[in-house]
Amino acid sequence: MSIKEMLKGNPIAEAQVEEDSTGEKLNQRVIIDDATPIRVQLDESPTIDIGDVQVKAGNENIGAVKDNGSFWTHSKTVTQSANATSGADASGAPTTGQKIVIDDIIVSVDTAMAVTIEEETSGTDIAKFYMDANTTLQVTPRNGLKLATADKKVRIVTSVAGNISSTITYHSEA
Image 1 (cartoon, one colour):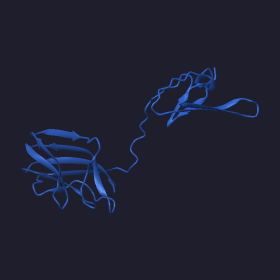
Image 2 (cartoon, helix red, strand yellow; image 1 turned 90 degrees about the vertical axis):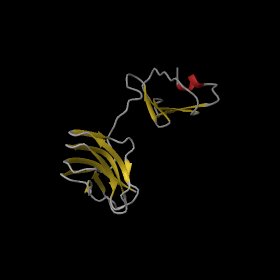
Image 3 (cartoon, one colour; image 1 turned 30 degrees about the vertical axis):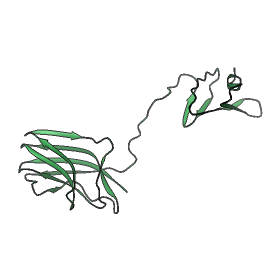
Image 4 (cartoon, helix red, strand yellow; image 1 turned 180 degrees about the vertical axis):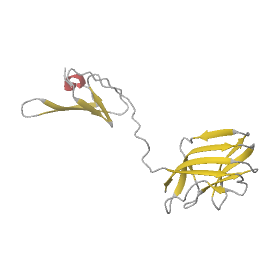
């Protein structure tokens, strides 16, 4: 049964079958109202476009997700200090006119302390962690932590002297 026959009489669906000069079916397209569920079963193996999704007949997966990674350029800064009570830069400068977005934070300390991630100059707190001695913390914010001001670095400030090591992975955006 062709797609056209399957959908015949359905007022919210439209079927279009293209054929080449020999009568071979090149493309079968189904257009459905976005609120209408549809089940399509084909004896042939054409590709059907439903919105932005391609559904192929046969044994191919439907709904598989492929992560090609992020589309921006990541930067990484490793900072080590024996006393960051006055603050230490934890990133480089962003692209001119843009803001830093923190993608990952890894912090290790040898002394119990509060660790504050802040914006350069303004001192605006981005995040604060209370850490026990000899611990490591890893944070991957779901949507990133974006600084409030363009052209500012990320800084780390600790509540007491003690060894701290941080790795901040970030990117720049408007």
